[in-house]
Length: 472
Image 1 (spheres, rainbow, N blue to C red):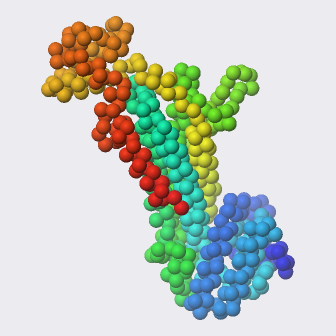
Image 2 (image 1 turned 30 degrees about the vertical axis):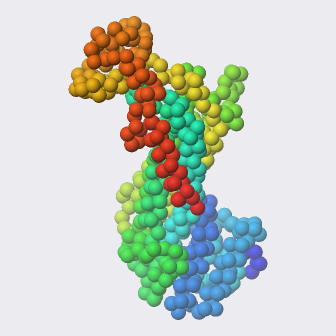
């Protein structure tokens, strides 16, 4: 038996080999092997096995001495994996088989008792939940960093005016701060969706075994407590069949990635010569192999493009599960790759987007110029008349008439003469010009959630509190 876990031929055999006279064909082994995917759960598998051995001793199913040997052996495996003294054997069927075989190789017969009172069916469900409990907070932390980056930009641009759009047409003026905070609120919901999903996986599946529990006196609640779960699952068939959490997290990832993709769409056209609102850092841009002048927003485009991968992974999971009878079916082995790929993709995209947006420069003059044309203050003309007692529908018609006159004269509303305004309505006086300036249009929108400085500062305060309260 090797000091560093070289697997002997007997221990290396598949966990189920006893019923078979001959081993599987080499191509069959290659086809069914999942260790290249599930190796990332090695430490989660060890954590679960340590708790399981401790529970087995607590329930008098194995001796305290055997449990101590198992726990020490598992801790040595973890230590050697961390240091690199132990390499994963990719000829093993899966990470669970590799760790159990390595354990048995190191401590002998006691290692064969670690699987007492469990199946790979409930073991896999446990490992996935433990992995997600460790991995999701890392993603959440990076979402908070992105929200913080947007808040920091917003603090500097509370009076940087920018056109707001509906139907990709000029609509009403807002500020860069207000616009970026809209994305921050979406990201906040993404964070909260992940938090809600974490609550639903904090239930221990271990002890459901293959599908019908165990005849052994397992103390599932004790093991759940050791692992920090809130409680245990209450139906063994449901436990080993459940992949709702994979579907739920993949849905969370898809929504998050969709938000990033929409944001990137805006960054791409804001970076065009036609808009010129944003100047992306050269560190987060690329050039052209043929056109020397080009500075391309490739990272925004790549994030946008990788959204398809995240959606595809989600659909793969839903399709895999759509016709499976109870309880466990081997199809479920295919849950990990799309789940992990989606996680890896969104995590990298959030990180890259944060770097890209944090280093961008904003052309406030171009943004302000963008507020000209399109008559963004037309609604404010109607609001002005409503304040003077005119019904809104009538005021809407007056404002539309003023827009027609401005179009005919090829000028802005604020450039119309008072005589033109009087032609539209006798209620309009000289104060119309102060009321429909870009700054006035923004500052007068002071209802909760509006773009005024006061309301933007409230948003910044609330988001800052959210970041502070959720930072680990």
